[in-house]
Image (tube, rainbow, N blue to C red; front, side):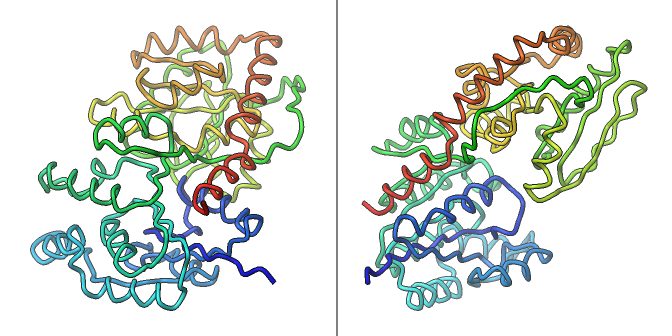
Length: 387
């Protein structure tokens, strides 16, 4: 009988948590047996919110421990330095034991969270395995705001060069890392969905208008609020905006009805999506957020595509989301955050003709087949980590 290679997915979050990283990895894990791989998941116990801790254990995920770093000042800053420079003895011993017990052939690390340098260091020193890292968000801009940039960039670059394979969320991320850190090779791995037949458009006047799916962060909330405010100015029309999120979105309007569905499992969100016409993708216009959105490709895009929702994008031009939507003609883009500009664009968008809407659906189908097909993505990923 052929023995299976072992691949260990090591990260700061649980797959029981909401978020794009968990969504991507859960789908990839489902395909691991097809490539003769036995997959394990290990989570940093210090990073897990209490509500997901027990669910994580029940799902069969391994936990490893390190020093407590939730203290904001004094000792907390010192302990963060221990993680930044991989000096955390408790964390190193915990990871060394994990590698010894599981003896993985491949260690995959998602570069997210304060302890990412520790994970990569331990894997290189004791893992005795091929090291693969995935970069969903540009790590240096998310952490250690009080640490000099040159130190953070140096630590991040060391992680990049300790890896045998590098996976990025978007082509824009790969190009950026290649230019800034001179990495030689990278592979694009993002979220994907099953291709389950041709997309069909059934005209239904009762379909609701706009749906937002995903976490709502402060950096995109202002754009979402401005979009709904512009809709409320179209006072001769009634609109419904659905929100599937961890955030309870409230907006007082006489002609815009907000439906807050809460955070639901994917099958329920899919059922809700069938009742809507467009997916909303708001992006921050703030300069401080520009690098984040330029390099990161949100998981909302493949979700909207797979669920037959042409995308209504509100954000600046220089983002990976904008490039993707424009390249494949997946919806509408509004690239000015002035209220009157948004209002003017919406007046034509809400009156889209059936034949134009059908063309958008055809474009979604092509993109799902060629770009966001999970079978193609998983093949690309697993052949890369096993070669």
